[in-house]
Length: 289
Image 1 (tube, helix red, strand yellow):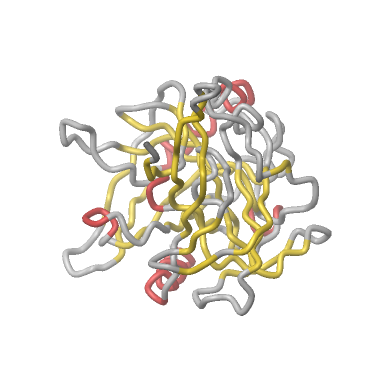
Image 2 (spheres, one colour; image 1 turned 90 degrees about the vertical axis):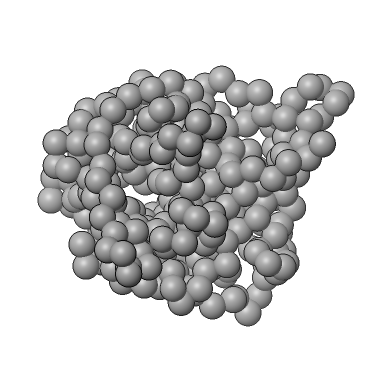
């Protein structure tokens, strides 16, 4: 039976501490990360650890998505530790000097089956990540923001992560940024990027789908990227030569099924978040932190 599931992926454990801050009337939930925990996150994510997360995969290799060989300004791998829980990652995109956009479930995983809150720790972003290499640096998160409604109804599945500069360099200056639109695109021909944890990608390579999207209660495509692609950008007007386009959605969930001939799990399709004016406030607030 096919099931709809969020597409973050997993593997081990670790530490760092974040404190949620949200006034009762505020529609935006802001979680700030202490300076010592940011330093601990950078120390934690060695190249060896980054390669290890996703090394074991039971997911079938993609048949629609293929490795991305062109440029991709500001797109990278977002590493986290869930506590309790595994080490994992998502995909994120720089959209301002110190801000990346991703899926809310990547930074707010929810609760355990015993109704215990799951904390996110060791949150860092590696733009341009490729097979253990971080040519554009690794940036620790100092805060992340999502709509307060997400904690109650799992919607809208979008978050902004504010990053520290490293060695005086801002992620947007070094890796580049993408345009972010909160309106439906004129053309639904879409390029989706992500770091899937399938047997083909193991989270180590950037993959892409190029295909039309359709709009229902959310955006939908037949892209088959596996877990780890959550938070990845959906572009309209993407130019692989320059690596630029306009992000109008981020990957939220996928329909997962079992290939009975091989016993492998695979993703049948992806769902993307409908960005709205309320999400624009996330970007504005993130730029003020």
